[in-house]
Length: 206
Image (cartoon, rainbow, N blue to C red):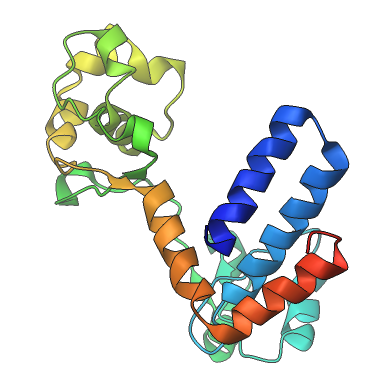
């Protein structure tokens, strides 16, 4: 059994047994593995809490690499001085308007194995729509949310949603398999393997 599979099985066993302390340690180990998997030499997204306008300054100082901030229009254009300032530091204005459904050629959906078969593009009624990924994706784009009103008879008959449902591909990726493959590739690296063993021993799992 590979180390990855052993960690997964240990986590399942801890969950079944209700061993909270052991489960917490295993999750810490998994978090450590995921942290080592991040490639800080390439592009990545930094998602941080945003409490006030000083957050951007703190991040700019704390992170050694240049950051291109995503900025809302009202902030990007708050004063006549803001646009040139944001362009100078490389900020990216975010368009908050809903996309034009007619301009969308294709919708790709990555989902879990149990949901990958829910790909009926023409649900017969509101109940069937609840089990249709194409309908959920189309309703989210057209109406801005996928709540209760996205799965009514009116939503099923909405011509804009119906047209967009056909642009969801005939298959959905298996996120669990993709993540497992990516983790397996990373575990093949001797340096990462050694780091996992070190962390496991420190947490009493070795």
